[in-house]
Length: 123
Image (cartoon, rainbow, N blue to C red; front, side, top):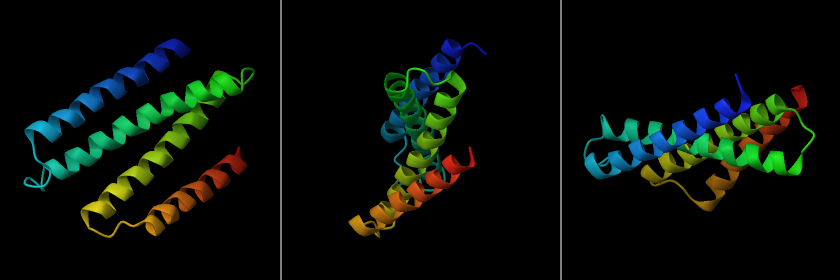
């Protein structure tokens, strides 16, 4: 696939998922419709944040590492976007359960950092 088409596909997915996330917040209250609203809220938040963070990471890597190949930049950015999105989702779930504090957020970030170090060392 052409690199530009790949980036455009991720950008379109980000836009659509942010629109879906906004519609879920407006039309379906995740607090009152827990069976359908909350999973849709978390799913669209995950897709929106992971695609947005992937794009941000890709453009940062393109700016900082100009000689790096496309597939290395996009794979690393995608992996890091997924990990940070999982941190966001777990922090959201912890906040819903009223157990989120600064220590649990730092522990989640530390776990994501350890996973990233492990996966980066495998490359």
